[in-house]
Length: 193
Image (cartoon, rainbow, N blue to C red; front, top):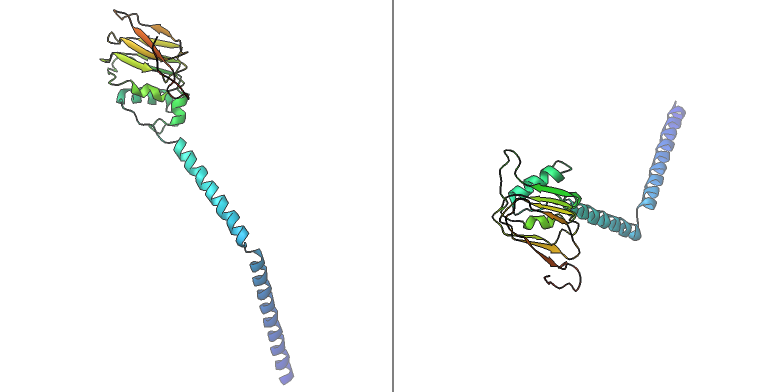
């Protein structure tokens, strides 16, 4: 009887020894797969690059700030492609036409035209009533057509090389067109024709 018990005890001990050896082998394998100093540097570089890419994407998606609420409303109708209620830089760059005239019961008046500079790829622009006498379109290099409804507009500033068709059928006087070089171009100087 003692021999049977001794044999069972030996088998249990052998089994425990085998389990301990297996556990030690597993621990050795885990130590071998841990990244060394170079591995941690690679992981850190990948993390930093991912972080930069994330913030670069977020910066491109930031919404623009408008000085005139009415221009912002019309821009939202035309260019808010993602439906978030804001115009991003990418959305503003995709706007090709903007109508700032009164339409049926939508009565409004533009208080400043400075927001038009946010739309560099604008090709067609309709300007409605405003008390402003000068419209600076020098940042809108791609303009092909400008319709002016306001009788108060006396001066339009365009970029050199930008030659849109100007239409002002309801205007009682002449409109002076001034041209300036693109102030963002290297070595650009302002001048008038």
